[in-house]
Image (tube, rainbow, N blue to C red):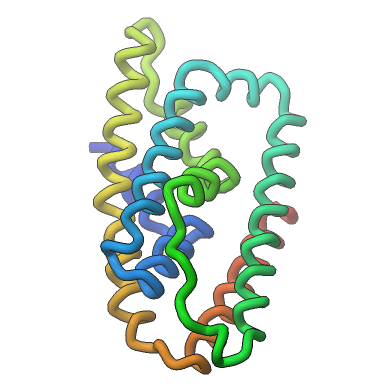
Length: 194
């Protein structure tokens, strides 16, 4: 029960990943967002395995690696912001939806998302029990994290489809892109300054 009290608020709270899930839902609908969403959850599972089976300890022992991750994440957020800003300045004829984000995009989104890295490191630090089987605990926590992710991320995609899907005029798409670009800049600033 304590795990749910930790994981649900962390997973469902706003951040760069959930913003992109909402964007995908708004632009491509639930069906069109599936490859991105599957890649996103596969990235979560991969990070759980990597941190649960050892990298978390390495990051704790070598904090400079966390700094590298922080700057890589900030660079990725700036890249996303740039893409949104470019879309916000596009002429009306260029505002039609592009190809939906795919599996690889979802996986990369997780791999370069500092919020997700922090959530998973803290999860293992708080919920691994010394003396019990590490691999069994990592498998259980990882499965729970990904299943909760499926339930907590769906409202972002659906909400994006319902809310953002209503605003499909070229002007509305430019405004959405500008707002998301500013959001990515704000999150990048927070990542760098925190």
